[in-house]
Every structure is written in structure tokens, then in C-alpha cells.
Amino acid sequence: MKTSIFRRVLGIAIVGAGILSSGSVAAGWYGDPWSRPYGSGAVTYQRQTVMRDHGYVMKQLSDMFDGRRSFNRDEAARLARELQQGFGDNLIRNFPPGTMVAGSRTLPATWRHFDTFVAYAKGAEGAAYRLAEVLAQPPSGDDADNAGTRIPPMGMGPGRRGPWQPGYRGPAGAGQRPGERIPLDAVREFGELNANCHSCHMLFRGGRW
Image (cartoon, rainbow, N blue to C red; front, side, top):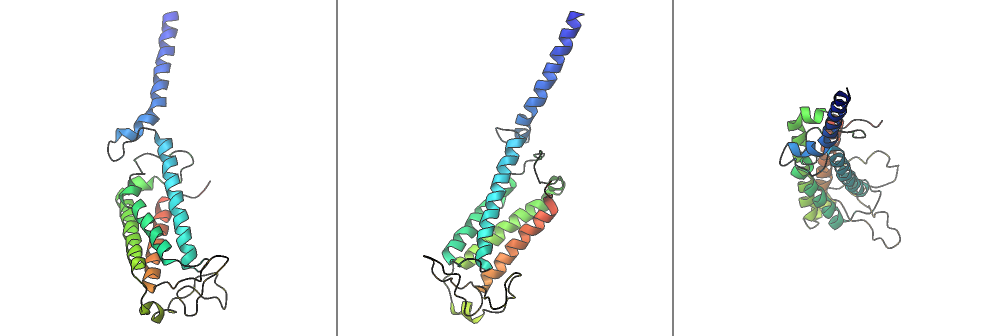
């Protein structure tokens, strides 16, 4: 009788150890490029940190393009390059199959339609690259000649000018120079990048709960 009980307890312990270790093995089970020395929870946390950083960079660019802060061409180009380096394969590698734990907003559809997700990640990389390339070009007379052709964003009250409009001087504050003009090509490329990100989130990111 005692031997039977001992065997049952031993069996339960072995099964429990297997369950506890499965989280550590799961991420590495798929091999490169998914291999990780830690489990799904840590992978998810790392992914959330990366995506949060991307969101912060996009917010900085959005503030410049919408006129909430002075536009600085060099800084905007640097931010676009930062996004470019974080998208594409560097974004995809943060989504190993099955890494969806409590607190994750990543939907199962991400892995059911992984080819589509990959296309969005590559599309974001390309859009960020094109934005950085436009911003890296020296300002031209066309930047001023073509201004004023874009509808101001929502929330911009009467009398306010966006960075792409004639007469824009930027919200110059203490120690801040007046805003530079934004080329319309950059406005278009930022719009493409923003739309790509929003579409991907609509398909593959769930709501908060």
C-alpha cells in the first residue's frame, strides 16, 4: 500500500516538474530564430517592452507632424531610423509561436495568419526607411511651394497652422527654436507608416481587459 502511494506521489511530482519546465523549453523548442533561454512569459514581457518603445517613438513623431511640438528635421530622421531598425525581422523575432500568456494583447490570429503579420512588419520597415530617406534630404524650395495642400488634423483649432502650412513658426518655447518646415513627401510617408501600424494593430492586437 505504501509503495503504491509512493509511486503515485512520485508520478505527480514528475508530471508537475514537466509542466513547470515546459515554459522554459517552449520558446527554444522551435529553434532559430525563435530560440530563447527563457520561457513564454519572459518573451511576452520583452515583446511588450519593445512595442511600448516603438509607440513612444511614434508619439514623438506624431507630435511633430501634428504641430504639438517644434519640428526638428534631424531628430525626426533619427527617430525614423530607430523605427526602421526595430521593424522587419527584428520585430518578427519577438513573436515566437505560442508566446501568448495572461496580460498579452497579441491575438491568436497572429500565428494563424503569420504571413500577413510578417508583411505588415516588413511594410512598417519599408515605410520607416522611406520616411528617414526623405527627412535626410536637405530642405528645398519645393517644401515651401507645395505647402498648404494637406487638411489639418483633427483637433487643430481655427487659426492654427500645421508645420506644412505657410506662415508656420512652431511652438517656440524656452530654449526652443521656431519649428522647421515639413516636406509634404515626409507627411505622406509618415501617413503610410501610421496607417500600416494601425491596420496591423486592428488585426492582431486585442483590447485591454
